[in-house]
Image 1 (cartoon, rainbow, N blue to C red):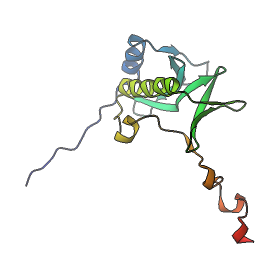
Image 2 (image 1 turned 120 degrees about the horizontal axis):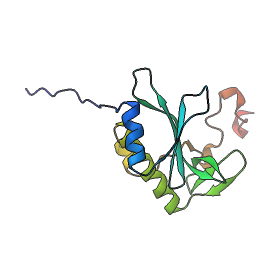
Image 3 (image 1 turned 90 degrees about the vertical axis):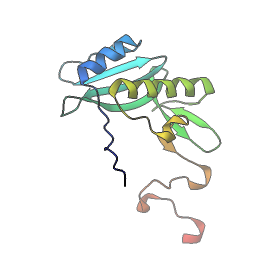
Image 4 (image 1 turned 45 degrees about the vertical axis):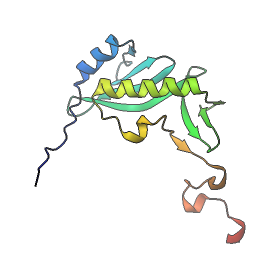
Length: 150
């Protein structure tokens, strides 16, 4: 019987992660006074990172594309993906999805995170909203009544 050593995912220290990001073309914006969250951007994409309690890096706001200067959540409606901000929603193009995927993979490498199989296949949406299951993620008491529930 063979025994396997447990997998170790050595995350980078926060300082090492900042150095890696700067060396690989990321713009790192230091936080305003009182905040510990840094913003990283590259190729029209952005994310926020911070120091975890163990001194390593941690993602504070997941990767997003910038739309009209704001981070936009990736929404999957089954037939197409969209980028959505608080004020605007635009169709996601293949080029923008590739930029987001590349940005996410590079950020994970910088922080020492493991790249998961399903994420390696393509962009992972922050929200899935297919036509037939609209409002399925709402609490039961907030969902609209279906015709058969009346």
